Image 1 (cartoon, rainbow, N blue to C red):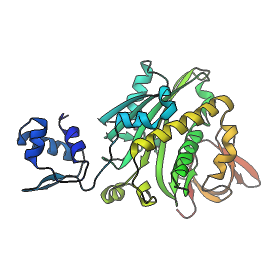
Image 2: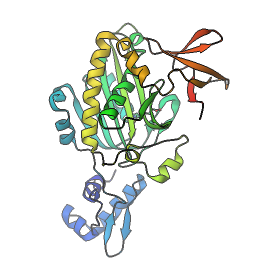
Image 3: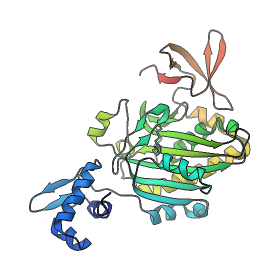
Length: 326
Ligand code: BTN
């Protein structure tokens, strides 16, 4: 990795032109080194305008994650987290899973300006580029075993929706088990990976990808309807404030989950479910489809649907759900 890339990108984050000469002077390097760094940035998928006689600039101004600003945004919850901020990393979940196995502390957060191999549920990938999405993972250790964590992914989804509503994004809804969507377009995804014994103790790596401002080219590459916060909110979002708010809300929800289980938040979750009491299409791994009405979710997070006069239960590995308009 070229060490100049991210220092220069932080400089270019103002969206203005900076000449190669000025940048070279600022970092005490040659103009050729600046050029090499800009090539390396482009290889990472960062779009950079380069105009002869004017220099380099980003397509738009960007606010980038900054460790101190995130810590400030945690307010009185600051002591509960340990933040590790990467300029670029393959996957914050992969990193934290490895760290968790090596004894990393409860509350460790790995966040990245750029994630090059983000992973999604069901072996999918999570695409992001500089400033396009907020990508982070949180390590949470539980006394209870992995078997008792079945409702955890729904609880985490609720923490995201509460935060988004606080931001004024009232149209953010949940799609079982834990997608966040706005008008049936995906805004955020959650990937939870577990370690430890079925009987306890256990550890969860909670990965969150939240779209902030998706470039048109990236939207076109994603194989499902997507949206971003910029499409619905008139003001630009400070990712540091947003990450601080998400982590504070996650700590609240995870405390509640640990003490009372998902059952205590089940009603609230259902109230935010985009398809509560609606007919949905259920897709089975073997290609079968079934249309059923959503009855709700159970205390362990399984989906309950009405089917042929009875109630069927599905866990998240068994089916995926589509709205009937999809
Ligand atoms: C999904 O909807 O499929 C889940 C997407 C989760 C993406 C996040 S981005 C931060 C963390 N690191 C990863 O590699 N994945 C999660």
